[in-house]
Length: 214
Image (cartoon, rainbow, N blue to C red):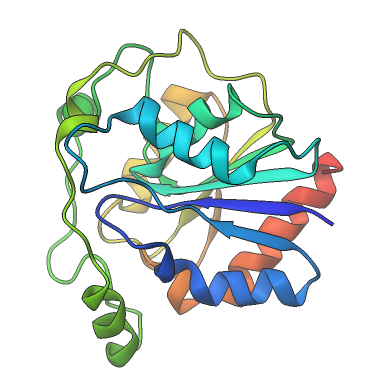
């Protein structure tokens, strides 16, 4: 049995993973939607990573970390704290050593598309339910430099959501090539594809898991 640890984006409750969680559990896996202290002004990226590592605990292998959006700054730090077999960045930010998360937008030349950049392909009732669970996001983790000197020595895959309006596909292809030196994979879906296409996302994660033997 594999343990999937799901690292959320900014100001998010773990609940927005619930459809993907159900898909992965149906495939026989343990799933940990990580609850980050995003409203705590005393908590930075190290505290976020500590919270995720504590949730994962002392599992020896069989851990897949999946990061979404701002979670891309936290997930590699988790890989430096606990044994991880695979790191999957799902429409996630890719940091560089010493980069402040708050500077990432200007450093990458980010520009989102117009209109609804989050939920345009999500059922409106579901989108409203997720919005109701949203939290405030402290600016603390955005201000400090990313502390790793290099990307962790963990197999890494990037899954791009081809219909993402927040991180548009041409933009993310360039960022992934420049910062990770790999070609991203792609699947249909907007920024919240874990809500609009949970089964397909679970299939992609399972394919990655089997590929690396996690």
